[in-house]
Image (tube, rainbow over the protein chains, first blue to last red):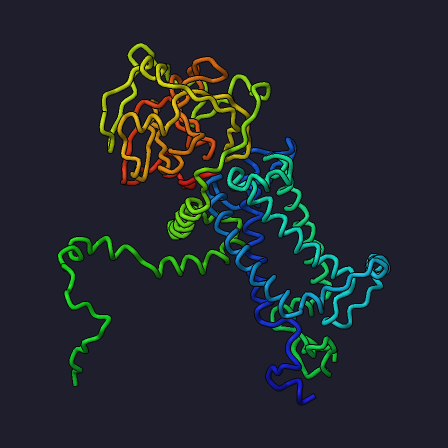
Length: 227
Length: 262
């Protein structure tokens, strides 16, 4: 127990290192900026006649302001995302926490979740549904960057436009990606609110873990009041 | 104790002329780096306050326009002057072209073609104006390209007229200058970078689908370039200016991005 309260060693550190927490909240701000300014840009030329986003939830008074926000936040999202991906891939975090995803477990845990029987005692271990959602959202955001580049530079990156058939196809893909991210945010935030310790964990770092993946005997910790 | 001034290797031996600094003191005082930093810090927090719209606050606009200017430079780097936009076949052409201006179609000011002249300003050797007949005699280039609006819509159009590079060469324009500006009959002005002006798919269009461009669509001459968003393609052009001084633009003044490259 003493060991866990000491500073970070090679063997034992917080579940969410500082770089991950920083990347998570930076990404949250950038993504919300992109979504809200994107709604304003969309309103000027809608894809679906019935769907306009109310002025009260968009960012930007006129389209040019929305475009300014969008093309500012894109840098934050991409640069922050690169830091996150490079860290996740090279530190072994992705492999340790997001892999493997077994379809059998996904189905079983999905059923448990929908019947409110899914246990969430150990924060440091993601269940199969979580893994699937987190890997999925990373891929969706990467696709958003790709379709965004196709819309921004349809001549310079004409090969990217072809991935989506044509310019309007890229716009549609960008819209669908946005919808998927909004859906993810709703599920993600709801589940986090149901288990508030997870929010605290993303703020303070959460319980300590061994690099091997096993959990350190819990020390008295703010985010772990149950123990 | 006052230490004697050290002779640092970073200290210039010849002191620059201070008069320039004195003359522009006010300008230098205006460049406030802290303002930019402060603005950046508050941006994140302000994003969540949707009730009050922050986009037009002066400090926020400073930051956003600084990023937009940075994006201009990134776009200039991304621009490949030899990369061609996709072209289409005549049966895909939308007729008539889509009307678009900052006012309604009823408010288009008719042009008197008999007295119309194309005038020149700036870094151009031969500034004699061209009549419409002069322009019709110039070799014609046809491009069938997509017009992409910043709003998100697009359509395929068939445009023909003088290639801008050939035209600028003929009138002795300084092709090393930075900007080519197009002044419209309707107080509209937009300028593009020289690299885009010299792109093989940038023309001074006088015809649409083989017929002279009619009034609502920019008669008798408009810019059509495959490498810029729609609003950069000035219509009802009455004068072309080549310059090294940034001339601004109708939409840029309102906060739209200047480079606007596709």
